[in-house]
Image (cartoon, rainbow, N blue to C red):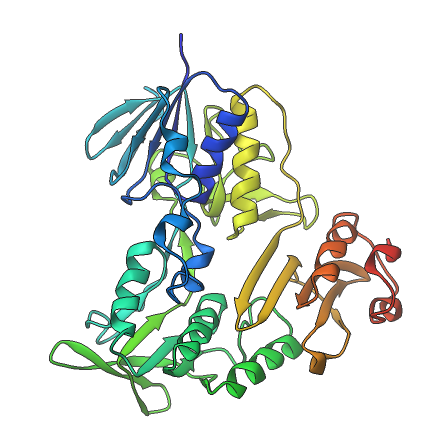
Length: 404
């Protein structure tokens, strides 16, 4: 009997799952179900080169269309999975039912939305998929002033692109500094100076009271400081939340994501979960974590595909992330939550430096700003739970690889 694997979702994790199954010569049937009309594609360029018009949509694809042109591939795009029947091993979609032997949930995540006055006006945008960016680009063509809500990765990447396109840019952030959830105060201050130096106006420690409009289209942002910021369009980037509803309705355990073990298996041995939607145990950091990154999506997908093919592969890696803003590449290795000390390595004025985070002497994470060597060499130290001498960490002439 030919085994059938159903992949629910068609994002980066789903694309890697299919690619890994093919690489391992899986000889069963693969059914890929996704609610977008596109084949699996890469999301990071959406807020960078694709938004800037430097990359066509076809270049975003994880694999070209011909990759899926095989008899055992069944692609069902523009199709939403509506439920999972675990007892019958069957999913329901808007177009009918599909039976599975193994089910891989790659349902991803969705943007958090503002529920305030004026949120439904034309010109208020979110950035998560190709269609979102296409709508933003259409508005950008005639816009002069853009207001960005949120100073995380997405917000600051959009700000950088908008400035390079010549728009007036105003970023509004509720926290007291940019990227406050993921970087230290000195790294925040560096990026604040970089954006301000290029003409971006930053309103920090500022909430949003609502949007004003004219003839059904957004015209401004009302802030918690009783001011109105004029805007031709608005991009909201206040984070994402995992798509766990399908799993929850099917009785699978949820804890800030679909709970999986270190093989990416849920409590149902025939169901895996990978990518943004899954929460996995971490030996390095202890407890359960959920990651929103390409690296996590790719490596979990490889782990799940290996399990389907009868291999026993454990997912236990140092997380990493990146952000491109202007000519600055921020590369982050590890998770800095819970740090009690940080060390700056290099001179921030050179625009090439690193910030290393420690907890009780153990290296937790590294923010590398235009410092790719520090980023690469830090991963093995973090994985090993290294406790390097802080003074040597701060010395840019000492290679991190010598501190293990």
